[in-house]
Image (cartoon, rainbow, N blue to C red; front, side, top):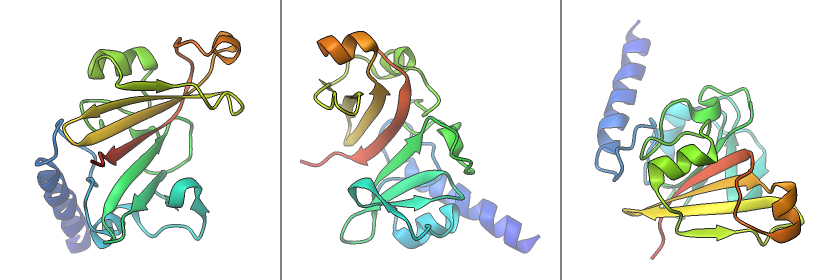
Length: 168
């Protein structure tokens, strides 16, 4: 019982500390959180290191990248079922978006994107990015057949999203 109360207190403390983040941050691990604090919520990472120096937190269903000071620099949320506790990020992360959202929902909640990159046509991916108040949100979608041929800006199925600190 004491352990459960301590865990709930930690989540409340982390959520309160996230309140300083722009955009109404609600995910229980915020950007710039220390690795130790993040791992109290997410558990330990698997031994698998994934793309872009992210660590996979299998039990939580997210990937995290830390900066050189061991603070959370970016979190990857998956749209597909990864089987983790925060799978599909049913908790809104920032500005009300979740990895379960559709592209029209991203556009409704975030407005027009800052950039749209369809240059990764070989992997059939499109990266749509919004930058707001020091937070960068990038939604990765599958290019539609038309986009794959024309590299237009129509929406496809969401693969994952990465929420990161905006670098100057």
